Image (cartoon, rainbow, N blue to C red; front, side, top):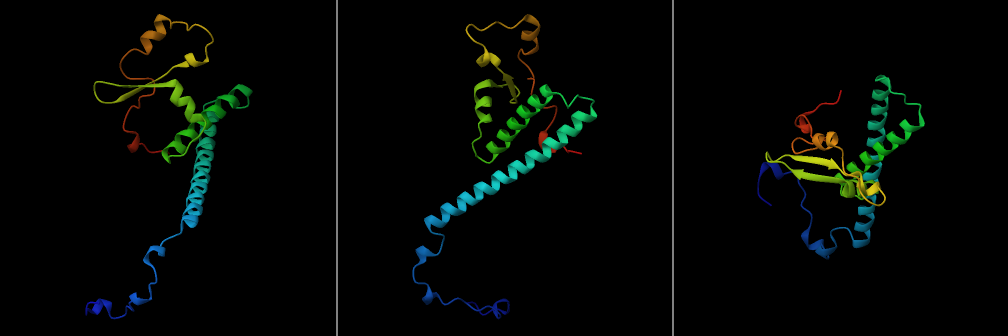
Length: 160
C-alpha cells in the first residue's frame, strides 16, 4: 500500500486469506435467483407505471367530456392500456402478448429525411379477400408524415 496520508486509516484485507478467487461472485444458483428477482421488480415497476399513466389518461378523457362510463370506452381503454404495457415491457427486453399485435399490424417506413412513419394494417382481421381502401383513405395515408409521427422530439416533451 502506498505511503500516503489518504490511506492511513485504511486496513488492507489480507490477500493470503482469499481461498479461491473464482467463488468471489454469486453462484449460478444465486445469479438465477437475482435475475428472477430483477425481472419481478421490473414487472412491478412497469405495472405501477402503466397504472399511473392510465389514471392520468382516464382523468384527461373525463375532462374532455368523453363518456367514460360506456362499455365501448372501457374496451377501447383496456386495449390502449395493454398495448402501452407491451410498449414499456419491450423497453426492458421483456415479452408481452400485446407486442404480437404491433409486430403483425404495424408497418414501418423509412422516410427520405431519415424519420420513420408507422402505418397500421388491419387486414389481419378480415376474412377472405382483402378490400381495397377508398380513395379518400388512400390519399390520407400516402407517402409523407405518418399517422403516428410526432410533432417534435419526444425526449424533450414535458408531462404536466
